Length: 496
Image 1: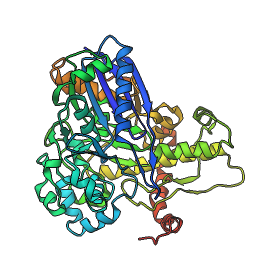
Image 2: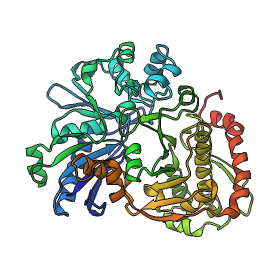
Image 3: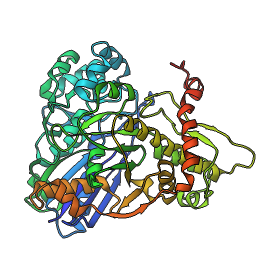
């Protein structure tokens, strides 16, 4: 059998087809444009996401022997609103923008950080779906009045593929009104926030077989009949599945943002979620959880640095990777362009660089930026360790995992092995693993992982750097407090 994994991201969509052993047989990619509103906020076009998705499915299908299943993962929080005729009437608003901040602060008075952590497994934040839905209610009541379905992105793709509106537990949890213990929409929170349960799809476990591809769509795409549609999920847990869900390992997704996703079994303590901002998200089944520790501008920072210090030339990332000094730097970097992720959750945090003297080159600074990003992940790993969540081995996936320099620095700073997969697209592979289990090719997800997810190589830490990076990390832990007022000044607000 052949399994098509769809990875629906914020800037484009990939379709990758795998066989039963996890070998890639074909693939396709299309980007789509981020629209900028007059006030500077950004959104995507739901129709463009769907159009590009159809294109990659058709291309991937044309380059392989066939497709038996389709399964999608996607970024969280954003949603599409449909009217009674299933036409799109509200496009996806990006979680990084300030849509609904006013409505969020009004809603915040109706609840508490402890309640949201207890019910939703999330820290209080305006980035989740709730604030955008409340914004739609208040600022666009005519559109909200016509709304019949509010579908999260992965949910929307499922619906367009097979006509079944069903959302996986992990994606639903990104709404901030989903009960992660009971795996159902929270009636308590919906009542508080004035939400209509009829707008939302039935929650299902990740890997649920939803139905068959619509016949008209199968004909249009040239895929053939009897293609099964399987529920994927939020991209980070699906990445973890594709990376093998190995004991003691955690997937490290290195894209525009960077996320470490350990599998925790039980839900993290509520006070820890509220204080450190690390979400506890449903995983494969009810009662099983993963958690997300992240820097939201990791790859974006690397991209910005290379673009800024290329002197107008089109210099490849490989030139910077190949030109950095071999030894650690004494330059300290706070690696945040547009706010920090966990554990600070400081939206005002900004990039800070200290320790530069006259002899420093752009390649020294580039290495220091990579060190800053890795120190930030060491901070998250140390915070998780305090709660008994141990990360002893990273499986790096995504665009950043192509940088051998970055992987080596990461291994040295964390002093743990860092591996890469034979297949780079862990999200699409995770979707294929789910499909193989859902269709009975393998008895369960664990057996599918053993046969389909394979490590290509492992970068071991250099123990000679352990003491140096231990000292640098202790200094890094205090850096955020030292530069907090300067960051607040840069964004025009007072430090808290």
